[in-house]
Image 1 (cartoon, rainbow, N blue to C red):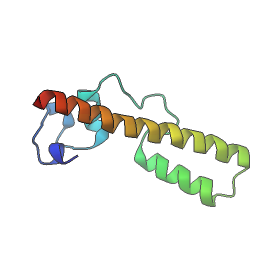
Image 2 (image 1 turned 60 degrees about the vertical axis):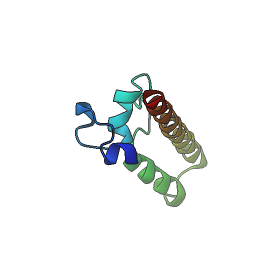
Image 3 (image 1 turned 90 degrees about the vertical axis):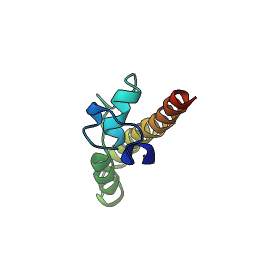
Image 4 (image 1 turned 120 degrees about the vertical axis):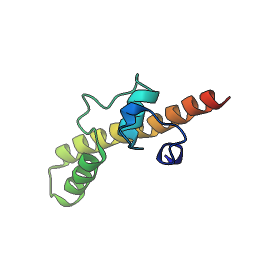
Amino acid sequence: MEIFSRQNFVHKDFKGSASIKKVLPVTCPELTYDGMNIADGGTACSSWKEMVFGNLPIEQCKLIENDLREYCKLDTWAMVRIWQNMVRKLV
């Protein structure tokens, strides 16, 4: 995130943000959160809270857990891919 927040790499579509949600479409357009049940950090946090403290049926907790895993998986892979693309630009 530092490379973007320090503006060492800038793009107009970042709109001044260093957020992964702004950086990813520019650096790795093949990766997208579109169509995911959980597609942003705010929803991830509230879904986790609901799953843990919401007294939900186990089936619904399992669905939320799967959605959270998919979201976190993409978030992690996105950071790896952004890093790989930045390294390629530097070499």
